[in-house]
Picture 1 (cartoon, rainbow, N blue to C red):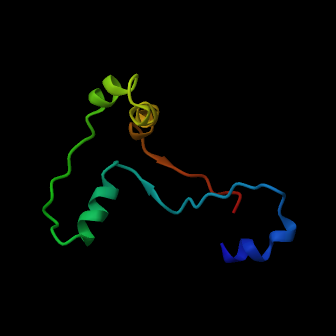
Picture 2: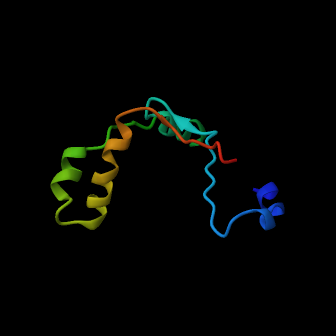
Amino acid sequence: MALLAERDACLAGFEWFISGATGFERGVEMAEALLAVVADPHLPVRSMPWWLVGAASPFVPLMRELWECAISGKWPMRLDNTSL
């Protein structure tokens, strides 16, 4: 980020930069990383009750937004950082 700040004059008015160094292949890596740093590493990791999110989405705006994100957890993904 510091290098981008130094090149501010060379960049367009609005540019999108993504750090693609981080990605989660199985979907549970974030939970495992959090368990590695908390005081109780034996906390249970459970899956998201997507059926409940879908059922509540017509009534609760947060659930509607989560429901739109549900598809992103079905396949491995990695962010593209070629612009960096």
